[in-house]
Image (tube, rainbow, N blue to C red; front, top):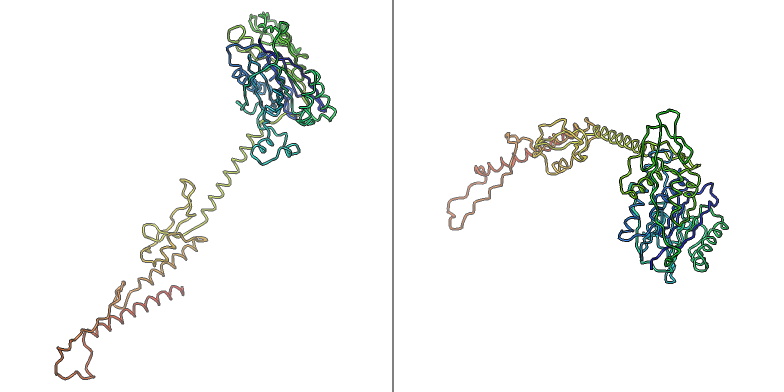
Length: 530
C-alpha cells in the first residue's frame, strides 16, 4: 500500500509587525521556512523558497528523491540571488529551510538554519535536525553547555542560511525508513523561543489529532508572549486510501499573447502592473506567470499554504523569482527548454519595514584594509632605511644601510661602504661580533664602530722594532748537556768572561718580543684615547 502524509499547519505573526515565516504541507511534501528577521525581504525569501519547492509534492518511482530535494533547494537559493540582482533593495535577505519529502517507503529530511524537525516514532521523541547557529557550534566544541545556550547573547546568530551570501550553501540531508503512524513536527524558532522540548513533546504525545496539536502549540506560544513569528507543521505517515488518490499537477495551458505595436497597448500582470508593449508573438509559456496560474497549479493538489507564501499568492504579489521557477517547471512538464525570459517590469515585493543591507560595505572595508596595510608596509620599509649596521663583505669590514633581516625575497639593506680592514686581522671575539652584525644608530655611529675595529686590527698587527709585523715568539735555547766523561782538566773560564754568542742571540730575541708586546699595548691605548 502506498504511503502518504496527512498534515496540519498554522502560522501566526506573534508580536512582530509582519510574518517572515512560510510553510507548505501536502501528501508528499512539507516545508517550513523562516525569513531572517530584521533583514530586508525576509518574508520574500521564505515565500519564494516555499513556492519554488511546492512542485515537488508528487509521487516518485525511479527517481532519487533525496538528490532532487537537495538540488531544488540549491536552485531556490540561486534564484534568491537572482532576485537580489533584480531588486538590490533586497540585498542581505535570507531564510531557513526545513523540508520533508516522502518517497515510497522512505522519507528525506533536508535542513539549513535554525528551524527544527522533531520525530515521534516507536514511542521515541527526538530532534532530527541540528541548529546551524553559533551557540550550537560552541556546544559541539564543548565550550558551552546546552542549558547556557538559551540565555547566550548570540543564540540567534545563524551560521548557514539560504540567501544571496553563499552560492552553494551546505545542506544537511538524511533519508530514513518511513512507517505508518510516525509523526514529524516542523517548526520555526518562534516555537522554541517560548516552549521547551519537554513541553513540545508532551503536547505532541497527548494531542488527539494533528490539528489539535498544531493549534495547542501555537496558542501556548502566543500565551507566552510570542516574541517572534511562530509556524508549526505536523505530518503523519499513513497508508493511502481511494479518497487520497493523488492528482498530479497539469502543465499550464498554452497562453497566446497578442500585442500590437500601438504604444498605448499594454498587458497587465497578476500584480496589477502594466507591461510595456511588444511586438505580436505567440508563446507556449507566458513570459509573466500570473498569480492565478500559480493558484491553479496549487489547486491541482491537496495542500495547505500559510504565512508569507499564502499572502503572496492571495494578493498576487508573487516575487519575480517565482515567475522564473514556474517557467522552469512548466518547461519540464512540456518536455522542452523554457525560452529565455525577456526583461519584465519590476514586481512590487511584499511590503517590508526593515532597511536594506548596503552591498558596498564589504568591498569598501576590504579596500580600506588594503590601503592601511600598504601604508604600514611602506612606513616600515622607510624606517628600516634610517638604520645602519656593520658586518663583513668578502673578508672586509663594511657598513650597511638598513636592517639585516629580509622580507621574503626582499632585502631590507644594502652596502654603503667597504673598508680596507681585513676581517681575518681581527681577534676572534671581534670576528664573532661582526658575523652577528653590529647595529648602529646612524651613519656616524657606524663609522665610529669601524674606527674601533680599525684600531683593534692595528693593535693586533702592530710592527716590531725590527719591522716584523707578525712576530713569532722565540724559544729560549736549552743548554747543551755535557756528560761527565767529557770533562777536561783544563781550568774553568773565569767569572769575568763574556757570554757566548748563542746566549746573546736569545737575549736579543726576548727583547724583540717584549718590544712588540709593548708596541701593541701602546697602539691599543692610542685607539682607546681616540
